[in-house]
Image 1 (cartoon, rainbow, N blue to C red):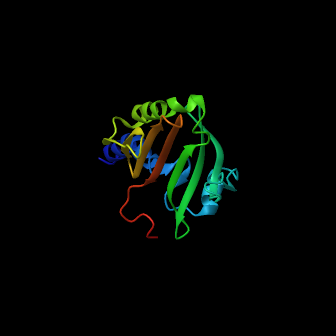
Image 2 (image 1 turned 90 degrees about the vertical axis):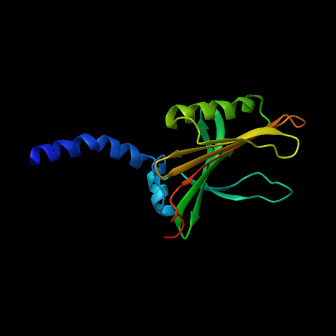
Image 3 (image 1 turned 90 degrees about the horizontal axis):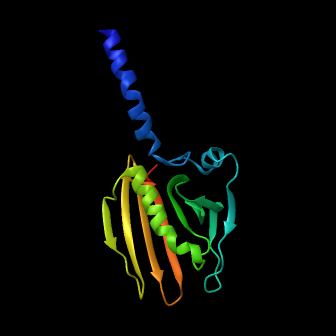
Length: 171
């Protein structure tokens, strides 16, 4: 009897590992402190500022240059009560010629990893065309919002990973 229970638990272990790995962005787990996130990335994260928009720069903590599907992104870790609750990724050069393919390449990669999005809806701010897609993976909600501003030849892309837990940020 004990052998059967042990064998059953051992058979379920890979499923538990897969579900657990979705409760994070790479090796940074939801609820981790800034120091723990820094340790998960082996000390490579930095404090930096993004380019000025209307004369104002924005502070970030993360990775200024991050490659995802050959797209040049920056990563910004967000904390609430000194606990990781969200990770935002955006294009570094939205006006680059190869940036126009990034929303499709990243959506295909996410669909391959997590299945079809739970939500797909139009996202059309101003004079642009785009989509909002949402995937749920374990305790992680992944939202991709993209649009193309044809008048400016600019692709906008934001990818957000955040805890899907109702207690996120209430540590």
